[in-house]
Structure formats: C-alpha cells, structure tokens
Image 1 (cartoon, rainbow, N blue to C red):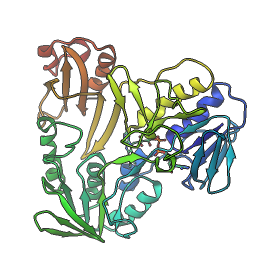
Image 2 (tube, rainbow, N blue to C red):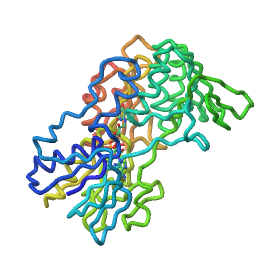
Image 3 (cartoon, rainbow, N blue to C red):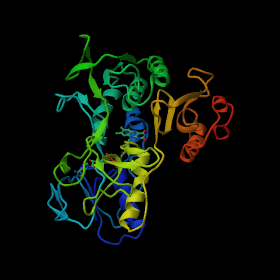
Image 4 (tube, protein in one colour):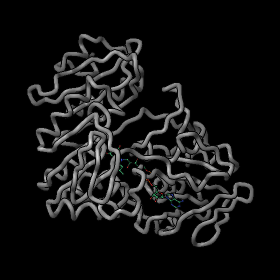
Length: 393
Ligand code: FAD
C-alpha cells in the first residue's frame, strides 16, 4: 500500500488503515522534507510568534508505517500498478492519492524572493521574519488566508494593505449582506483594505493596481486560493475534473483500478448537496480517511460529511457549517457590531437549516451542525432571536 502525500489526509489514512487491520507494507510518501504537520497554525499561531503544535500526533514507527519524506511521485502507471518517484519506482497493490492542494499564485511571480504564498511550513518560515521585523506587507486577496495573515501582521505592528478584486472581503465565499461588515474588521485592526480594484501586476515587493496605484512593501503575500496538486497525474488514466480534482466516488475510489483519493486533492459526489464537492477544509481531510480506509479494507463506507471549517481573524472565531446557495433565505441571529456576544448568519432552504456562519457563537455552530445534518425545519422568527438556543428554533 502506498499513500502519496504526507499531509493530514495521507497520515490519517495510514493510521486508519493500520488501526483497521491492514497488515501489509505501508509507505507514506511526502514531497516535503518535514514530518507530517498541520497547516491551520501556519497562518495563525506560527505567524503570530505563538507556540504551535504542528506535528501530527501519529506514532508512525509504532504503527510500522514507512515514512518516505522529501520524495515526490512523478507519474502513475495504473496498469502496471507502479508509481514513479524522484527516488525510484514503487510497485503497489493499492495507491491512495492524498496529494493535497497548491496555493494559486499570480503570473510572473515564481522565484521572486519577496513575493510569497502560504501553503507550507517553509512558506511560513519565509514570511515570519518579515512580521517579526515589523516590515510592511501588501496582501493580495481578502479571503481566509489574507484575513488571517493581516491579523498576525497587524499584531506584529506591520503596515498592512490588503487589495481585493471583489467588492468585499470573502467575496468568493459569502454574499455581500453577510461579508460587507467584515471590511470594518480590517479598519479596526489598522489594516488598509482596498476592494473592487484588480491587481494588474506583481513585481518583487511591489503591486500595481488597475487604477494605476503602485503599492510598495517589504513583502507581498498572494492569498488568492488553492487548487488540487494533481498536474503529475495528467494522462495517467486517473479521472480528473476541470478544477483539477481527482474524481472520486462516494467510497473514495477513483474508478482507475487500485487507485483511491482523499482530502484536498479529491472531489466526491455529495448526496446531501446533490452535486460533486471539492472542499479545501481540514475537517474533510480528517474524516475522509475513515472512508477510504474502510473501502480499502473491503467494508462499505460513504464520504458525505456536512462541510465544516473555521477561521480565526481579527480577534474573532468564525465557523461555518453546511452549504448555502443563491435563493436560500438568510436569517440573522444578532447583529455585527452588537453587544459583544457575536452573531450568526443562517440560511434556510425549503424551511430547513442549510448552513450557519457563526462569529464568536460556537454554540450556534455546534447545534446548527446537528440541525443541518438532519435537514431540520426551523421557525425563522425563533431562529432570528439570539436568546433562543438554535436547537430550539
Ligand atoms: P495537504 O495538507 O496539502 O497535504 C498534501 C501533501 O502532499 C503535501 O505535503 C504535499 O507536499 C504532498 N504532495 C503533493 N504532491 C505530491 C507528490 N506528487 N508526491 C509526494 N507528495 C506530494 N482549514 C480549515 O478548515 N480551517 C483553517 O483554519 C485552515 N487554515 C489553514 C491555513 C493554511 C495556511 C492552509 C495552507 C490551510 C488551512 N486550512 C484550514 C486547510 C487545511 O489545512 C487543508 O484542508 C488540509 O491541510 C488538507 O489536507 P491534505 O492532506 O488533503 O492536503
């Protein structure tokens, strides 16, 4: 058994396989030189200079899992059941693709020393000294990563400008009526935010905007999203979607003989969503391995969790569960800027709770998660009252 990718999904799959009774040889191949680690702290504790538990708590030696680190898979031969790597070929009985995602960058920025993306430990190690020195930072993209890096940089005393092509922060994830107030969070933290102005060029330590403005900085962080790290699978016969994701089925098999996929690199058909989902969320990479391991061990299993993720930004804890879409009815619980108890945005579809964004209201998230899972009908008037527990709405 070979697992490609020693991130959360790969390491957890190896652990689940051993715990489920897989006795044969098990190799976990990782392109990065580091032992498997967690990414969320990279843009939070690590950048803020706070203690961070990065390494995953898996005892690979005790589980007899061979860690092949600093070794990259370069080609997959499905028929021959052979994986080509930069350290020589590996024959397998089954291979699990857990190769994750890459940060998107802007054209012409590869190799520029003062332009960074944030995906890996090494990326964070490049960015941290800029913050520690209180340098200036331009952040391209007011998404999840942009907001978290802006938070850390402002806490470190850096001058921060965030440029966003969309009309408001988190424009790709949330509608204006929910996300527009978040622009105030940037201002409150002392970060300049410019929305609705596309970037036309990024040079080393310099960003040019469509209106002709040139912003100079000690470093530029490009935080514009991520895409599955699957270019190396082109032509292998493993099915890939237009978004670059490995097309897995509900059991996380790919249809290519002996090939399975899990985590950020794979999309799967979600019965609860009625469509194929590609999510780049920690929780998906944590729970997917249960399904892929069960499938490999000959048990019947389906991967269709309620999507969940969190972010910590500008002193607030954001959690999102479910999936909202155009046409859903938005119900607010509490108002942004209200009396310090946080607020939530809830989306209803056909009278049932479809998604919840909770800002500093972890109880709403916990209770909402169960209701979204059950597609429970809720009363909009009770839902709108932040004093009524969400589970009783
Ligand atoms: P990855 O973590 O990307 O791991 C894949 C591994 O495979 C990588 O180490 C890669 O080097 C390796 N690899 C790729 N190709 C090959 C190859 N050909 N051969 C060998 N190895 C290969 N999610 C949340 O829900 N909340 C958060 O707050 C949050 N914060 C985040 C902060 C940052 C900075 C980042 C980058 C992500 C964050 N995420 C967060 C997302 C979450 O970390 C990911 O969803 C999760 O890491 C996905 O795990 P994975 O194992 O599928 O992929």
